[in-house]
Amino acid sequence: MYYKDLKEMLRNETARDWEFEDYVEQLITLRKLEHPASLGIAKQLVSEGARSLTDKQIEVFVNKGLDSDFYAEECRGGHDIPWSEMLDAADNGGWCGRCQWFEAK
Ligand SMILES: [Zn+2]
Image 1 (cartoon, protein in one colour):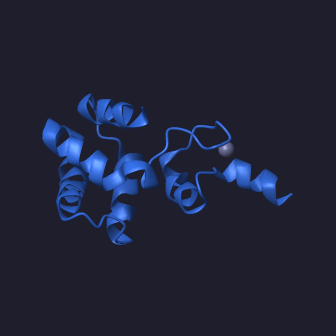
Image 2 (cartoon, rainbow, N blue to C red):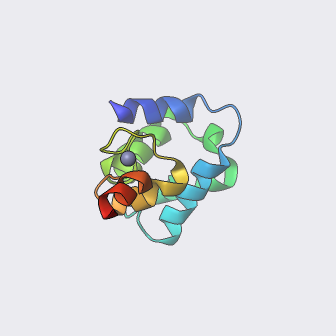
Image 3 (spheres, rainbow, N blue to C red):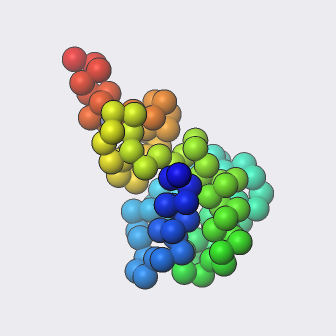
């Protein structure tokens, strides 16, 4: 379900989403994108924005790049996850910072 939404977001991008691009750049730097095609697409996205991508590239990038490991529409506790916290959430099994904070108390 959320795959489709992320693809929709990328297809309909009208202005560049810097937070999202920062996140993708982080994934590149940390070598999280192992699929060669998704890595190339990620680099294009960061340099030229999502609008430069074809439907096919978006398809590959979401399916083989972000997939369920690096993108969740909301955390397991039902909160929205901002892009700036997405990597932390991915490392922590899908819990956002707020949930982890409550957990730690
Ligand atoms: Zn949460």
